[in-house]
Structure formats: C-alpha cells, structure tokens
Amino acid sequence: MTATPLPRSGPGWRAWLIWGVAVAAYVLAITNRSSLSAVGVDTAERFHADAATLSLFAVVQLAVYGGMQIPIGVLLDRYGSRPIMVVGMLLMSVGQFVMAVSPSIGVAIVARVLLGAGDAAIFPAVIRLVATWFPAQRGPLMGQMTGLAGQCGQLVALLPLAALLHSTSWTITFSSIAGLGVLFAILVWAFVRNRPPEQEQDVTVNTETGVIRVVTSSIDTGVGIRAAWAHPGTRLAFWTHFTTPFAGTAFLLLWGMPFLTAGEGLSNAAAAGLLSVNVIVAMALSPILGELSRRIPTRRSLALVVPIVSVQVIGWLLVIAWPAPAPVWLLTILIVCLGAGGPASMIAFDHARTHNPVHRLSTATGVTNSGGFLAGLIAIFLIGLMLDLQGAGTPATYSPEAFRWAFLTQLPLWILGLTMIIIERKHTRIRMGLDPERPRNR
Image (cartoon, rainbow, N blue to C red):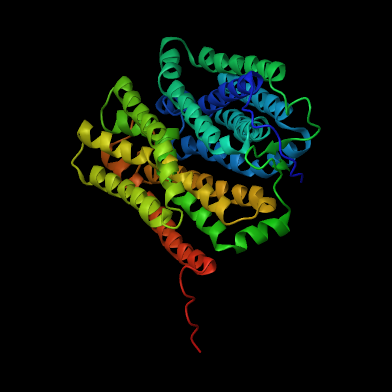
C-alpha cells in the first residue's frame, strides 16, 4: 500500500467509455437472466412442462449463478474484468442459442446452466472496473448507477422480448438474443481494458488521501469464509439479503406473468405493464434507500429492512384474501411493495462492508450475495411444487385459488428471515458495544 498524494482529477473520457460498454453488457446480461419472465406461459406450452418443471429452469439458473460467485472472484483476481466478461457474454450466447433450438426440457435446462454461469461473471466484473477506473469516492455512486442501468434489462425482457416472441417465433427470438451476446463480447474485447495503461496492477485511488490499494476480488479460502461468518454482522447481512428480495425475484423472474394472466385474467400487455412497475419502483427507490442506509447505519434493520419486508407480506396477504380476481389497483400496490425488496437487499452489502475488514470484504460479500439467491430458488421451487400438488401445474389448469395457496409458501421464508434478522441484529449490536451483553445463566 502506498500513501503518496496524487492529483485530484476525475475520471477521463476513456473511463466513462469503458464503464458505458461494460454497463451495456450488464443490461444485456439482465435481459438474458429475465428472458423467461414475460414468456413463462409460452415456455410451459413449448416444452409441455408442469409447474415444478417450469420452476426448475429458474432454480437451476439461480443455483449456478450463486455457485459461480466464488470461482468468478478467483478468476477476476487472476485475469481481470475484460476476458472474464467476454467469456461470460459468449456463455450466455451459447445458452440462448441452445434454448432457441432446444427440442426437450433436458436440453433447455442445460441452456439455463450456461446462462447462469455466463451471467455470474458480468456484475462483479463491472464493479471491479469501477474500482480500477474511478476514484474511491465515486464507488458508491457508480455502483448505484450500475444497478439502476441494469434494471433496464428487465424492462427489455418484459416488453420488447415478449413482443418479438409473439410476432415471430421462439427460435428467432432467442437466436436474436444470442446474436446480441456475440456482438457485445466483441465490443467488450475491443473497448474494455482491465486497468489504466500506466498501472501494472488493478488499483483504486482515494483522491482525498492519495492512498493506493490493490483491488482484489477473489473470495478467500475456507478460513476466510469461517472468519466472515463468525462475525454477527456478516450473518445479519446474509439474512437481510435472504429475506428482502426473494418474493420479487420469484414474481419477476418466473411466476408473475402466469399469475397475472392465467390467474388474474389480465392480458399479456397489461401484465407486462404491471411487471414493469416493479422495475421502475426499484430504480426510484435505490438512491433513496442508499442515502437512508448511509445516514442511519445503526438503525438500518428496524427502520428500513423490517418495514419493507412487512409491507411485502401485507401486500401478498391482501391479494390472497381478496376474492378473485383482485382489482388492478391492489395488484399495483402488491407490485410496488415487491419492487422495494431489490433496493432493500442492497442494505445487506452495507452491513457486510461495515463489519468486515478490507482483506475479508470479498468473502463477506460473497456470503451475503448467496442469501438472496438461495431464498429465491427455494421460493420459486415451492410455488411450482404447490401448484403441482393442487393439480394446477399447466397453463390449462392454472387457477386463482391454486396460485393463492402457492404464494402462501413464501410465508415460512419471511418468518425465518425476519427472526434471524432480529437475532443477528442483537448479536451485532452487542459486538459493537451498543447493547450490553446478556448475562449467562449459571
């Protein structure tokens, strides 16, 4: 580490160009990730899949995404962002092409495996580019801007992608996405560079102090993972990320469109419009919750996380209790509540950053990030399983009552998550000296 003061200059045009190309690739990655969100019914009909099998597409994709976070961190540390992003874009392209020509469910699941593996490489690579090309003070803002831009990929999946499918064919639609992936792999290779040319290592510079730090994004060994998990702040971060986004993930990634169309009787266009509200709400709330999290670091859980989870639970219970079909205004309220879950999940990374030293931050971030994907894949699978158990596992047999019972399977996940948040918050406050340690019974 060096502490030599450097000139306080902002990032140049090349940094913005690299970030712009990388973020555009990230938008396409989100489109790939969400590509079944608006065409779930079409997918079920194409592959003659029941609800449990349909949920397997998303479960496998999320499982691969989460499982790849550790090796992606190691590879980023060794090779940098540029080659990892290129490989990621090509993997997604192959996955979407296989999806386009897939003759069976088995082959289609392989396609989602490739898609999840490629998607896993993009966001951490973009964040690494932010760290190496921009001053440290701009990191939080650039991270928020990257996340906001990525939300546009969900809008592309909900509207243009569905329109293309319904006006052409399955093969043309998914082959087109595959072609875009190849194009962006070329653009990334042509324009993105791991670091400024005058640097021999990926470093970030604090322009206020002049301190230079080497950027490392590899996840630590098992020793580091155990050390991170041993801190209650990391466990609080994990359960925060576990609890806040999974309902929105399950709804937006797979089950929202079938519920709104086959379950609630909305047209495809109206359902896609409602789902887009989720994305808009997430984009609007991200900077607000980020600023609030910064201002009240010791009250994040009780003031922000618990209320947002509570409104998600209340929103779903109101929809479930309302005689079908639910009015559009109530469905809109539900989607607004679910939209808050994504920005709230970012508070988990504030916990991880606050309670872990720099050398262990990547480990704590990886542990935290796994929480939301674990809860999301469990929720998606349980919803599909409950539909099948009720004999409503295909588009022809979907019903409002079956969907309502299926979405009730989310309640145990919320109860577990909220309970652990309260427990680990208390342990964290004791660790920080904010609360007295409980006396042990003798």
